Length: 222
Image (cartoon, rainbow, N blue to C red; front, side, top):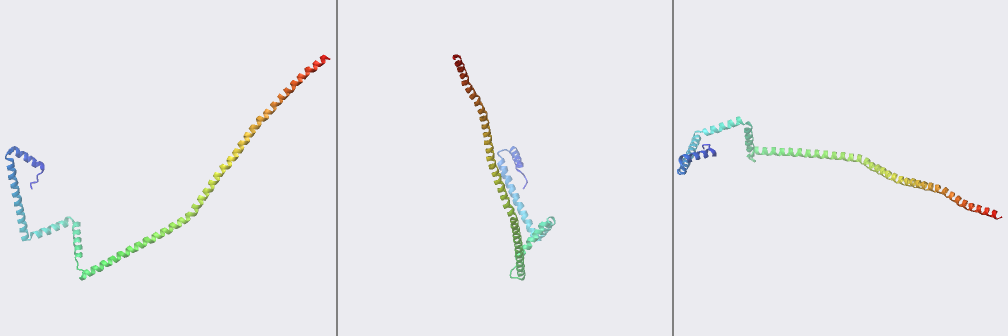
């Protein structure tokens, strides 16, 4: 009523406690509460009396129309929505047995038929587009399948040739290695064979040398 916050009330209470004292403070609060209650009752009675007087004189209707005009001027969109809502409510309250009710039912049926036809046409169009897209996809797959089958076959051929060439190269390398080893082994054997001939000559020379002194001894004895 007096538009006072908690801070203002706290200040007022502290000042009252200092001025009045702790003994008379509860009595003061009680009297203030009674005065506020009486003032609220008087204000309620005054507002009710003013409303009754306005109803008797027709001022309320004028004020309501004035409020509506002010609302329409300040918020045209809201007033338009209110008029649309009132029109819709009036349409829903139409008697179905009357001529207007029958006409409204026929119009609603026509609207439903139009909506159903448009929905069916849209569904058929989507189905036709889906079938065309599926046919195009099948054609593209049919074009791609020969190339896809040829590519794996060529890859397999290259893999088999690549696998066969190392196998053929390995035996050739083994043969060359064995041939090189055999040639190396033959060369020392050839070198060792002439070494045995001097040994034979030396052994043959030794008996000859021994036989020569024997002959000289025989000559001396004669």
